[in-house]
Length: 292
Image 1 (tube, rainbow, N blue to C red):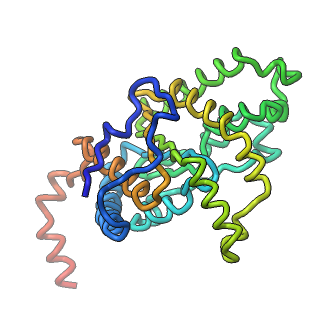
Image 2 (cartoon, rainbow, N blue to C red):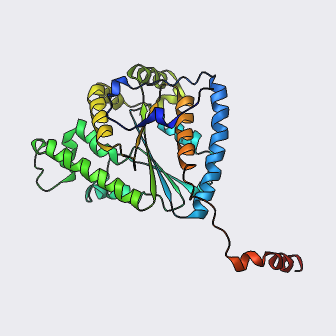
Image 3 (tube, one colour):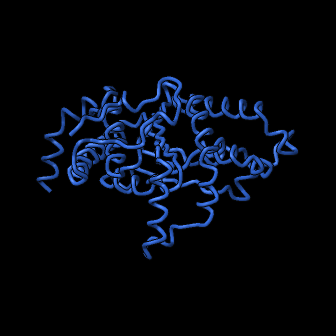
């Protein structure tokens, strides 16, 4: 099987989105790819146990991508072998009335993982510079000072918002959150195939929304916004990774492998040792229990 290398996916310089691959060929069958994923996700689960015992880092996994890019099934398959207490999944929908009464990052702060845990965000704080940028009228619903019409949602507004997001992530990183941002890079043709499948298969009908077709017409707008967002916010402490998403098994394995390989580089993540007194008396504690 072709090796998945972090550097092939990590975005460290300006990118042109149309030039990035949407299909990852691992030179192996889907069944073999799935077998490899089982091995990696078990290793990830054990690593999370160590992370929990260590108690100094949390991991934030951000998943962004167009509709049908496979985010839901990726979460199901990659984190299947985690202790349920060690991973928290959050899916961000249209802001509620309460959420709109706070600043746009408020609900994302509330969903951050505690130290020792993984937080997986299906759609993220980047919705606030993606969907809202394609549909600037949504910003008016935030009822912000100085924003009275769509004309006020200008380049200066977006520059400010990107600076806020960069500062948000920098603050998290400095306080022990390891951030991974995955862009599920789906081709337009593959999205069409997956949408047709939702229409063709009765058991998949519930996933379809007419709104998907409206958003699909804005594909190029979304790609422009994704490219700009990635270029402005891919930092060493919070990097973006391009994940070719046209093949779901390969995309899942890529995400799992990048997580595992990167986290294994943190040599200070280790299970804490017992204090000297407790360690020296382990045999006594065993005797006490055996003699009950």
